[in-house]
Image (tube, rainbow, N blue to C red; front, top):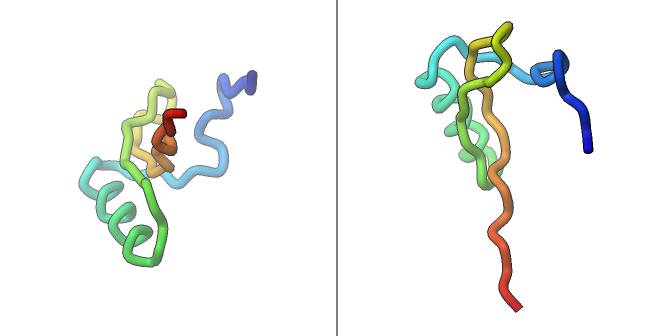
Length: 61
């Protein structure tokens, strides 16, 4: 398990609003990124929005 307490936002770009995060996501997708999503940070000291990868779909066997 990776512990991220107090470091969850390190190295991430913070956006003040959901709209700005979604604009950033759209630019990343236009440049070839896949499965990206804007999400609100759960870190109370941040309170901003970030863009990250969504999980890969599970394959069934």
